[in-house]
Amino acid sequence: MAEKESDAVLKSQFHELGNGRYIQLTVSDTGHGIEPDIREYIFDPYFTTKEVGRGTGMGLAVVQGLVKKYEGAISIDSEKGQGTTVTILFPKVSEFEE
Image (cartoon, rainbow, N blue to C red; front, top):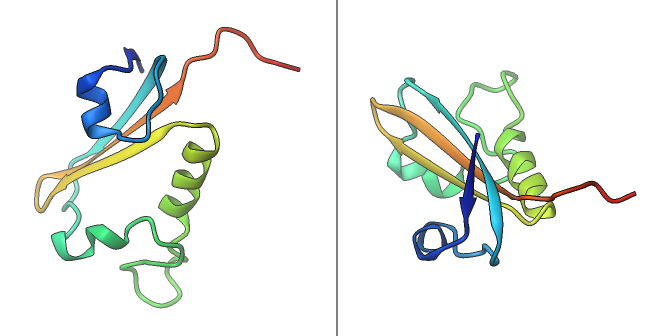
């Protein structure tokens, strides 16, 4: 995890970010990547590329919902045959509110 300041570079990738400091979480794999023709659907609830009975397709929709609820942003970069990188930014808080 890394700490980032919201600046022009971040806002060009994450348009929904406000001003302030963010914590960045990045997860990558070396899998087969996401096909370009399905990228626009990856956050849709129930969308899956798995066989019937092998998954619900809720994973990324739930993740995106949680990230947005906490005023963060999510980005997925994937190239066929090269794997996928998911980047999530959450606003940094200095202490928890009760």
